[in-house]
Structure formats: C-alpha cells, structure tokens
Length: 242
Image 1 (cartoon, rainbow, N blue to C red):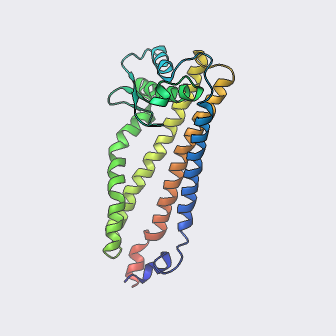
Image 2: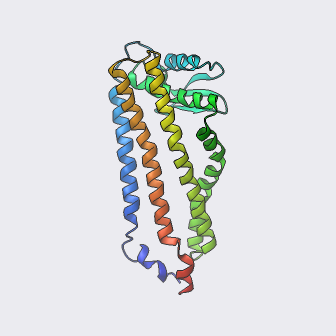
Image 3: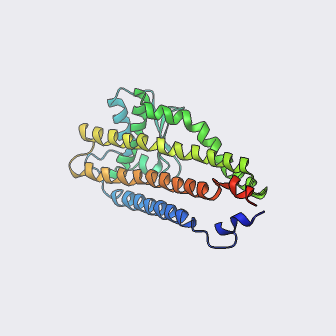
C-alpha cells in the first residue's frame, strides 16, 4: 500500500527536498539582507531630524489623509498598516528614531494608507483574499497530513494542495502591493524634502531589501507547492497501480 512512496523519502533519499532547501536558503538570505541593511541605515540620522512618527504624519497630511492614526506598537520590524482601524502602526525603534531607515519604513506603511485612500485595486484584491488565505494556511497542511495517514487519500491531499495554492496566490498578489507602496514612499520623501541627496538612495536600499523578503517568501512557497504536486499530484494513479 505504501510502496508507491518509498522513492519519496520513506525509504530512500527524497530528491524533491532540494526544492525545500532552495526555498529555505532564499528566505534566510533575504532575512539576513533586510536585517543588515536596516541596521546599517538605522545609524544614519536624517538631515531633517524627523522621527518616523513625524515623517508619517507629514506624509499623510500631504495627501489630505487626516483620518489615519499613527501609533507605536511593540516588537522589532512589526510595522504595518491596518485598513480596518485606519492606523499606521510603527515599531518603537521606527516610531521614535530619526534615522534614514526608520523614516523609510514609516513612509512605506504610509504608502499603504495612500493606496487605501485612493482605492488601489491590488490592495483591495489582497484585502478580499485575506480570509481565503487564512483559511488555506490553517487547513492545508492538516488535510495533507491526514490524507497521508489515511493511506494517501486522494481527496484530502488534493484539497490540501489546492488550499496551499491559495496561500501562494495571496503571496503573489502581495508583491505588487508592497512594491507600489515603496515606490510611492520614495517619491514623496524626495518631493516633500523629508529626505534629500544620498538619503533617498539609502532609503531605496532599505525598502529594496525589505521587498526581497516578500519575493523570497513567494518563491519559497512556489517551490513548496511544486514539491507537493510532484509528490502527490499523481497519487490516484500510483494507488490504482498497487
């Protein structure tokens, strides 16, 4: 009954594990780059002396956005924009710091607030897809594992794979949203004079490194999905042959 899976790691080396290894290496490299880049430019004080909070408020006001609050939240690099509560949430190190890195991160989150204000279509699409992605992330692997325990149940494993595919799709939808927010942030920081000269390029480096984490996460998930398809996509045929 289980003989069809021996070649996939239950008795011999699983060659598809290299896909997981590649994904892991990509994620680690991206994480290391964003941490080192942020740490480097966190030591560079902006010429205007604005903190992340002050820069965020000025950016929002410049776009006529007055119903979005800027607040500090616990953690490191936990910065995010919440469209439900209309809040730009900045980690303490970003909220109170006047570094080039902090201003860049704060501006990026304001970029999301601006997207929300103008009705940016990819942001709305991502927001609408959140429940589907959350549902898929919670149930995909349990269904796949239960299917395997039950002898590689074709129905459960395939449903699990489709749910995981929904998570991958969400990550792909996220990419243009994040890239657009950074582009808006850099343009406004330059136009408003919040950052000037080489500071704009330094901020672009910070946000570029951050964008790579989303690219790496999406690539890693795609590789994981490919592995699942290779392993279990033809499960019905393998079991019919037993």
